[in-house]
Image (cartoon, rainbow, N blue to C red):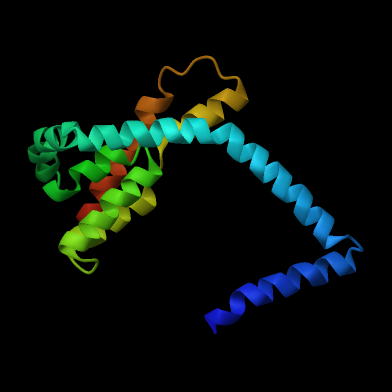
Length: 167
């Protein structure tokens, strides 16, 4: 069944473009041009964030900070194996995906640690990236509480989620 999804999408797009009397090929080319220009604009920022996150992990700073916070997180019900994921997730979705993949490889997906990792990854956001995009477009000048509130609410969501999984 899944092998028919891509051809079905392709045929649906062609049918809709025929019904709207639009040239599907020229619309596709226009979309591709705008996607390439967007990629050229965004790529340097993504490269910088991915490099910083990888340096954070490869230098051992991430592991050291994770070990420092592990006892505190363990007190609130979050396994120590998930501290790196909690630290990386607000910074980078790709970096957090790498940490999540490592957790799945080491502990499995059907374990309590795997379930908590899935919950943390799926219910949190890259706070700094989203905030920078949102605030740059909305022209908000007073950012006093926005990012701390987002980080605290993400952390509280992780705690509550892991506690609910334990029940």
